[in-house]
Image (spheres, rainbow, N blue to C red):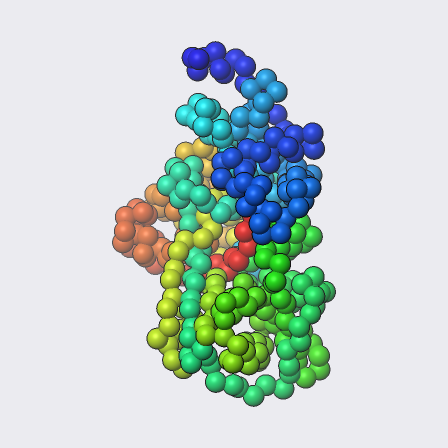
Length: 406
């Protein structure tokens, strides 16, 4: 069939509950997940069918339909994320899939463009996603903003016990103290997702049945840290460790080390972008790093008006010359400075040496995954040395912590 004939039959619309079976079928086809595989890890047939109702109910889902048949789809969760202390509305992209017979027809390109336009209208000035293809999403304006570090520690390398006044207690996975700890953590940690009911549901959706939760309590029984883990084949698996104080960190590691007689190794994931080895007495552990989350600024003007630059002075003037492959409103010159009251002034006039970069590079720089000097050195940013020095002073240093998956 000719593409022109196909395009006449296709219509784009939002999905609703009546489309959940087709939505789920396309996802499972695209990611090669069978009912048998899901049932082997404890899912029931009805649970499989209902597993994606939350997406249809709570996300903004767009699809291309060939008459009544779903051909391509993309979902956006309405989420919130901490960016250097400011809480931003964020569009979490998920459920991206197209049947192979409709590949190369531009369906996903148009779904992405429309979804980004809708994000802008909803005030979601930034978007996150877990990539299945980094090169593909880079072409669409997303860029890497955080890493996932996995580690393996032998039982003989576990930290020695550090005396702390509190203790760890095992609790239910959905214990209120866990949510209280994460709420406090997310408000102070750059990049962290604000977990409401939807985010917690997604966090646990595909977890193993044997997942255990433990909370570190201070001497006054104040919850200061938590641990999600499971033990299998003499390996202690850490899903996530969150702590608000160093006392809690020591207390949680004391708890892990108390399993010495039961395990041979500890495996885990670290999302801080800082190697764990430095914190251990025996630092000769195995650590691997891989890109994890990608992001892209959806609406530069809205994003930059909230961005918490470190220095807000009339002496600092910046002109960004941005290229965006999908969104015309982000293309061109954007100049910023501040008045005497530290209010941001945004214009389209050129007021300093232009900083030439694409929207993805701009995103990773403002998210502090890569510094301006590094991006200049690898020729991702084009400007003069003095402007790079200004950027280094203005952009906060803290790197992204993001441990969720959707």
